[in-house]
Amino acid sequence: MKQKTLRYGIAVTAVVALAIAVALYLGQRTKQAEGLLDGNGQVRGTEVTVSAKIAGVADVVAIREGQILKTGELVISIAARDFEARLDQARAQAAGAQALVAELDAQIKTFDVMSEQAKASATVTAGATAHEIHRRSEALSRAKAEVVAAEVQLNQDRKAYERFEKLLAQGFISKNYFDELGTRYRASEAKLSAARQARDEAQAALEQGRAISGEVAIKQLDVRRIAAERDRVSAARLTASLQVEAARARVAELEALLADTRILAPVDATVMAKLVEPGELVAAGRPLATLVNLSDLYVRVYVPERDVGRIRLGNPARIFVDAFRDRAFPGKVIEVAQQAEFTPKDVHMKDEREKLVFGVKIAIENPDGLLKPGMFADVKIKVDQNAAW
Figure 1 (cartoon, rainbow, N blue to C red):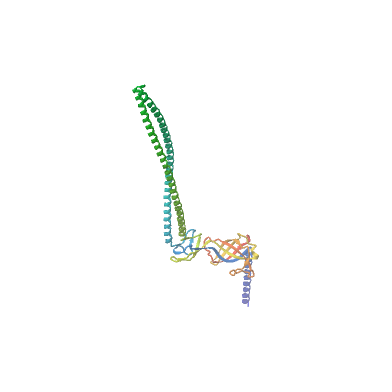
Figure 2: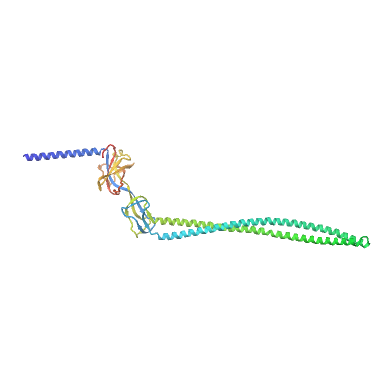
C-alpha cells in the first residue's frame, strides 16, 4: 500500500513538474514572441541566364557547377574560325582602301602644285606678251614716222636735184656742187628704202607678237585641264574614303561578332547550372548557364495585414534553414509590398484564416556562401528593438 502511494506521489510530482516546465517554456516562448514576427519562404537570388547571341559550336566550356566567377571571366567560347577569316579579309580591304586614299591624296597635292605653276606661267606669259606687243607697236610707230620723214627728205632732195640740173646745163653752177646734190639725192633714196624695210620688219615683229599672245590662251587651257584632273581625283578620293568607312564598319561589325563568341560572366556570381557541353551545337539565344550571386540572396515572406504596419524598412531579421538549424543568418527588411495579395499556395500561414497578406523582402547576409537558392527558410523579424531573439 505504501509502495503504491509512493508511486502515485512520484507520478503526481512528475506531472506537476512537467506542467510547470511546459508553462515556463510557453511563457518564455510567448515573451520571446513579443516584438517578433514569424514567416517562412524560400531563399532566392537574382539569377542571370547566360545565353549565346550567335549560333555555333561550343568550343570551350570553362565553368563547372558551383564555381565562383568574377565579372568578365570566360564562361563559354564558340568556335569562331569563320569570323576570324572574314575579319582578316575585312581588315585587308580596309587597309587597301586606306592606301588608295593616301595615294589619291598625294595625287591631289601634285595637281595643286601643277595648278599653281600653270597659273603663274600663264600670268607671266600674259604680262610679258602684253609688254612685248606694246614695245613692238611703239617700234612700228617709230618706223612709220621715219619712213614719212625719209619720204619728205627724198622729195626735197629730188626737187633740188632736178632744179639744179637745169642750172648746170645753163652753166650757173659748178659740176662739183651738182655732184654733191646727186650724192645727197641718192642717200635720201637709200635712207627711205632702209626706213621702209625697218617699218616692214617692225610690222612683222608686231604680227609675230600678236601671234605669241595665243600662248596665253593655251596656258589658261592648261590651268583648266589641271583643275579638271584634280576634281576627278578628288571625286575618286571621296569614293575611296567612303569605301574606307564601309570597310571599317565591317571590321567593327565582325569584331563585335567575334567578341560575341566569347560569353563572359556579366557579374560576380556562382554557377548554379551548366547547360552545355563542349562540341554541342549552340543556337542563338539558347541558355548556356545559370548564374546566381550568392552574396546577394533574399527571402520573401508574407505577413498578415494586421501585422504589416509594425514592419519598417531596415528591421533586423534572422533566417533559419534546415541544413544549418543551429545557425541563424542575419538579414534586414529591404522591401515591403504596397498592396495586399491573397496568400500564395506554397506558403503555409499559422493562421489559415488570414487571406490577405503583404509580401516582405528580407536581404540575407551570406558571406560564406552556405545558403543556396531554393532552400526553405524560417524567418523572424524584429519589429521591437527591445525584444529578445
